[in-house]
Length: 630
Image (cartoon, one colour):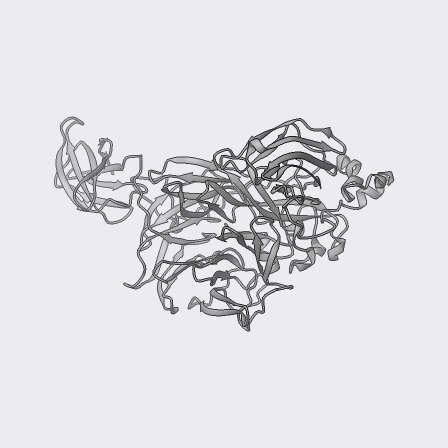
């Protein structure tokens, strides 16, 4: 989905705002885990300065010392923990953990319970109540290891969280020419798509996108190889969707996407949806620790966990980055969720690992309503069990993380790159970084807002220990598109590249050598945060739909048939008669798109349709409907 104002590096995003009085009373504790002495300051001084949110040492490890084998979150020494956080203890069987004690410096001892992960490699301590903003929390306990029982302890500080006021999305004027209209499904006002180019060499597979920011109904949609609609799921007004894709959940292919509310500051407040091939919802994944799932990325792992991005605006003194002392910062990162239990296995915050000064955003304009969006995570990839690769828009850098400790191992691009960047290889405000099987990295390079490249591009980058970061191939749209936000690049199995141009409403496929094979444009003001091409077999649980229209002066009827989401139908049969119990075959026709118009040779009072696959097998039948005068 489009990070609207977050595409402007001068702005950022908030989540929860602390009441002013509570903020003033707890300010001093937020300055440091042991800063009780600061509480003697006056209320006037407290109101003039936001609390500290950056830890004293960056890029600490989440692995506890002393041979415990535990990886924990919140991160020891962090200032960014949510008041609603759970304590995640990863790396030991739940039964090996014991004696866990949790105490807040203001709220006192916290009762709670340990609940194990379904992977049986750890547990979360779930406090019975929330922590106080600004207080220091001490966690202690024991863990049995092969070398004997080990004690552990660590501390973190609870953040003062900031919230942006809810801004209701106001429906814009309808634009009839930008949407498709179907007689059989008048509720599906899916965006129209203009096919600009399609070569015979284009790859097989359906196209997955999300209709966003348009004038009418929004939602996830699937298009066939030629760009014709296959499936659309209209969302309630005020809701948006992003990042529709095919993943595997257990042994089955599934559709996943984010849906929720998208503040104008450019992140998501929502949840992740998992749907099977019958378009039945089989799961919803929510962020934990009081946060909401962000729209930027969602990955299901073979272990039954999910990685998802989160944004968490914090009240923060940003004077160290030459910003205001009374302001806020948008912290962003990711969580790993145990899908089965909903527990948070781990949580990573950018503010614990990357300096505010690494940003290309402007801190001077930061306020409580528009925090300093200094990092803006927008993609997650797991190239190996030992590492993760993330992309941060507002530092123009990619980060290779140690999967166990969470520490940044390498910075690729940005102000402090560990990798030499060859001329022409540098990215600007990029999205969707993915490590390919050969070690190359694919990335959508926006290069815009502010504009630093003449046009946006898809890039394949090679990382060499000697030559550094080198461009293998760049993919440019013939109309020199410049996308100030969003975008994706997918390398297909045959070597082609499929690009969603984000804020520019184009979907394109290129050959490995850069020849344009497919190009289409969403109508009007519609956009799609990302776009993909996948193989997909849709077998809807809901039956097809038929509408029968008879001419006013008599004669045969025209039947309109559709089967939302079905990818198997190749032909239709129409049955009709004087009652629903006396229907005979009237006509047959090949499927011509989402909706097929079928002329019948004679008038019938009632009709139904059957959907047929390429072998002539009946897939499903509609309800019998009465013909209406049209």
